Image (cartoon, rainbow, N blue to C red):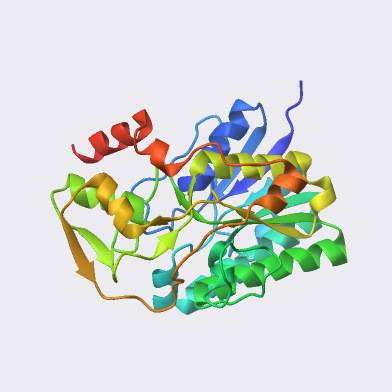
Length: 311
């Protein structure tokens, strides 16, 4: 049996590697592109059963490489994906997130790839929109990261309307789970707190800690990608929230892990609260979350991750 080819950019990182693993479990021929540039990652995860290529999506020749030939879908996750590092280096973030996405779309166009699933961000909503956040709300980009990622959404929608590439944009809310980044002060909060606590250091809470986020398990994000690929034929050109539909404050996260905390000044360019309305993705793709944060903190996965950090 000839396996269908799919390609994952950023496929050795946190979310991308989980997606690659699941696609291989479902018997796809998976091509992985990653340049190992994500500074927040402790490790990169290359699945030996995939066809792996250390390639930069900013390579001007990426669209003429044979990697895209006969591919049925591109899952585009490669990005500069943290707000504060992007603000510290706005040119690089814009090049990777906008120009890199453009080059990937051009490769899809050159090789007549019918579908591309684009990983984007809940930072689209900013401060002006009241929760729960719905896909038809006005954009309110507060930083160069959100500007560059949302501009990528515009490119995806333009390539669908102009060139017929079936693009779907998935707006991730705060993603957590095994392999989550923990390096540096700007790493995602759950992994950062776990590492700080396991190392005997105080958990660094930015501001008053009452800010809330919608935390989404990586396995649910993987399912959203695959369901968009398999069930999204009537949803091309659309954007969807991928969230849990529940809020948790930073203080509540810290309380689940330990008691030793330290307060840091508030940061510019970040929303106060996020909460996804997930009715659209359920209506279009029949997706809904299966893992909830309060249960995850009681799970074997959490215990195993903490034990690994404690060594």
